[in-house]
Length: 324
View (cartoon, rainbow, N blue to C red):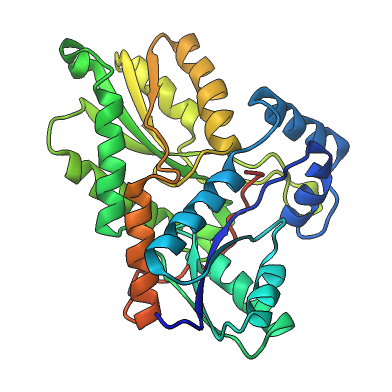
């Protein structure tokens, strides 16, 4: 990487102040204001996890650590809130940077994030050369990192109970219409899950499966109900309970860092479902700014800079995800 190159890590977006939630939700809803009851519900969820998502802190830490490894500027940007890509790119261009390497912090939705940076560059600094990493959810280092945190979670369960222990690997749900239009997201998530299970080895869990969590709270065009990709987590739990599972490890392999979908949707809501259904729930730790993820980001950044990063077909739909 040359001295005139910079790396931009792009995450979903979150707020520092809960008063900014209406603005974030409007961005997620493509400029349409969120109904007051939706704003209130999202605020309640933030308040339930302490009033603030750690996503910005994790992303900043990753940028600082990766910059130390690469020896060039590394900046964080958020696709749907501050710091927006346009502001980050404008500052880098003024500092003399000529080439931007984008590493999306959404391994199965890379093109959505990369395209956001490319669009921002066209608006504020068209002279910048912008190259974005393709989907990297099946990068071998990422598979190993997820397997390691799942093993650590499994160690919390007594050995004699492993025969009644299941593994559920989760990712954010998408509207079914996106999948039906040809988006490979579901296929890629399931392939990544099987990679992780393969790295764990045969017979570690009594059974394993994939579930799609954090379905959106909004409606479709014209207020029509929106069908979301499943199976959902609640239904998956009900099936496990019916089959006699007493321990369940949830591994959110569709996410890289802690945020609302981890701290609320899993640690509060899903844990309540598990208690209601009569089994113990364990969550594998997020990778956050640890060396496991940092090693992968360094590899992805270097391969993308060289133009040798290859991956599955790019996604064509938006994540449709909620606040992080």
